Length: 116
Image (cartoon, rainbow, N blue to C red; front, side, top):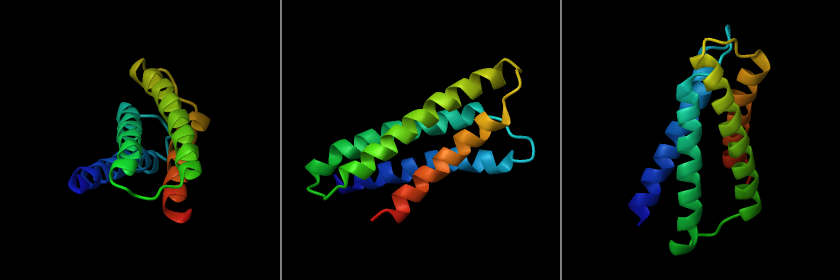
């Protein structure tokens, strides 16, 4: 079961890389890519599954931290969906929306790594 958890952690990090990497790569001309939405969905799915595995693996968890991360991740998914939809329709994506997606995803990474 530990290998499953570790694979989920890997995929969770890949999801964050998809969001933040594309955000940094398009910083001169901010937009929201459909791949950022895919990364956000990947993060939600893997994060929720990992939260469910914590008790099964008898691991300690800070559920306040995980709850805050989940709320932020849900906001990222919604914003990435809205931006991705605009991108697909060739409509302009506001800088605020693009930076919100990347910045909130980066905030979630910071919470994951800095909050002990």
